[in-house]
Length: 236
Image (cartoon, rainbow, N blue to C red; front, top):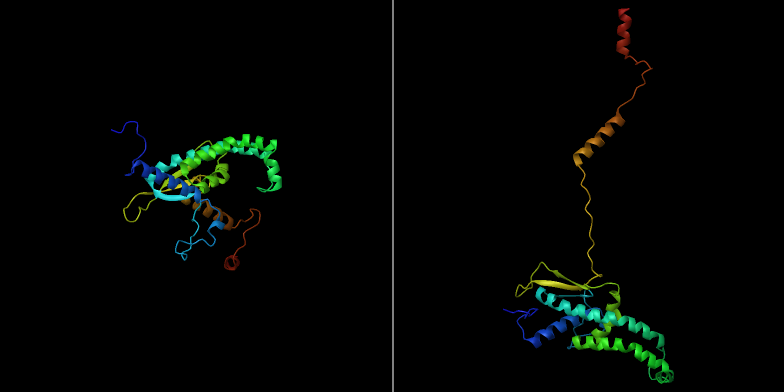
C-alpha cells in the first residue's frame, strides 16, 4: 500500500524521474522560442538543419508523463504570474541607459537604483525559485517575459492534456498532447434544430402549383371554340 504517496513512479528512481519531468517542462517552455533562433542552426554534425517546432506551446509524450508534468508546469507559471506586479513597479525607477555606460554607472550609485532594487527583489526571488525547478536560464526567461503575461487574468488551468488516437510506434504506448490553453482552443458549435425535408418539399411544391394555375375573372364570358360555334349555327 502506497498511502500518502502521490504521483507515479514511472519505472524510474527519484532522481531520474525528477530529471525527466524537469526536461519535459523545460522543453514545453522552449517551444515558445522566436523563429529567428533556428536560422542557420544545425546539429552537431554541422549538416543537419534544426527545424522549429511545428506547433508552439505543445509537446507530445505518453499520457502518464503528461499528467505528471502538468502540475510542475502550472506551478512555474503561478510563481511567474505573482512576480509581474513587482516587475511593473520596478520599471518606474529603472533606466534606459546601456549597461556599464556612464549614465548607467551614475544611475547605479543613485537613490533610484536602491528603490529599483527594493521593488525588484521579489521578482528576482521568483526567478530563482523557478530556476531551481527547471535548471534552465533560457526557459526561465521565456516563462517570465512571454508565457506568464498571457495568463494574468486566468486563475488557473494553464495547460491541457489531450489523448491521441494513435499509439506510439515501438511499444504501443498511449500518447498525449500537453499544450498551453488559449492557443489551439477548440471552438464549440451549437447544433441547429433539424428541418423536416418532406414537409418542406410539399410546401414548396404547393406554392409553385398555385403560382402556375391561371386565374380567370368571373365577369368575363368564356370564349367558345370554333367547332362549338359552327355546331350551334347548324342547329339554328
